[in-house]
Length: 522
Image 1 (spheres, rainbow, N blue to C red):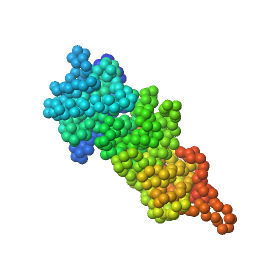
Image 2 (tube, helix red, strand yellow):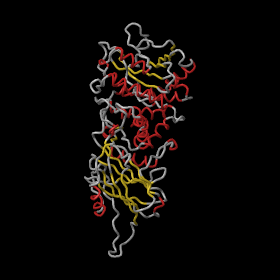
Image 3 (cartoon, rainbow, N blue to C red):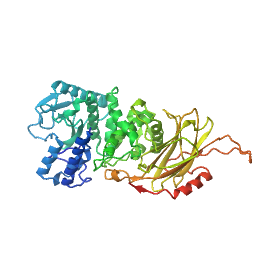
Image 4 (cartoon, helix red, strand yellow):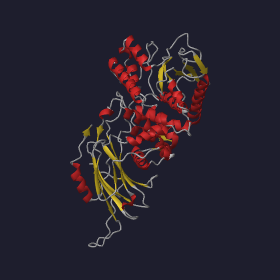
């Protein structure tokens, strides 16, 4: 399901400047080459092609294309193009008809090419779109798509069965950007999948009403999350969210950008897990929708960073702190503490510790990117109840900050302890062994430069770290003093290296490791 921006072969005087025209600049030949590569990959692997950035670049550089190049682009993508018309447009739509078969409902005008699908399937698809409107707009309070107070929202189904997918785009409608939806006919050969596709694409149509500020990953993550509200019994979102488990090291806000990287493509959908966390553990659906309402007042283009969004939202008099919210997410992700837990997979772990004391470093192959995560598990049977795990941590000083949390639990978070870090991102904390539950260390760097459309996630900054862990009895009394040692890590929890770390012995060890922490690019 792709959220693509409109391709207009011609531009009228009434057409406003395309929102990303001053952000993206590229050569048409390079854009065409990327489209060819993406479609070739899709044909070979059966995976959907990540065409969104390509089409955005194409629209932003429309005046650089020759007519022949535009025709080749349209042929490659097999896309219908509603052309704004002065006299021929039907009264209930903003654009001239594209295909001969039509069907209408209260809010939608559906057209399909001969051979695309049957009229009964057309009615089913239309019903799914109306159900999406009813749930997302009427019940959940999302904004109605732009100009739908005057015109019905156009939906096109070309007879293109090679791909199962759809996209939502915008085109000029009397001086504003109105969305329309295109679904490939291959989408209707996968049982009821077309229903969740309809809810996903319709959420994109609403997203455009809030502007273009959010980074692209949040468009796809939110639309994937919205499927659960319209069709809660299908759980088609699980296929995408489960992909998060394979690539947790990739930055939260990563996207493919000007590349056809399949991991980055799937990642944008997989980060629906962040939306589910905000909903189920922080502020409910209103908070997820609130991230879009917040973006409406922003004038950026694909550069609204999630930490700024969470810090800036006020919901029913409540404000939020990204550091605290993100630490909670790290803990929940360690044990997949989510509703319908069987729809998720446990994230890949850098290490599973079965013997203490132990030391460790980042995965040489996939060290974490900014707002990416690394998970380390400690078996719960490594110590008896009443014993504690002490972990000392050192993060790469090349980052702008680090998050590090200790978590206890197997299928839910029983306890979470943030590790307080000093200005060098060193610190230590303890967490009790109880009930045989596993313990976890989750770490995540942050780099403020790693945001915005033009940051290259295919060459993303990656960060090193080191840790040491040992088990101890907090109630043991040293024979030579008769005084019980203090439990480490009692400082005020702070993220991003704002607090002073624990005991001197641990920090001395960490100081030695600090020299080994070197910034690295893949």
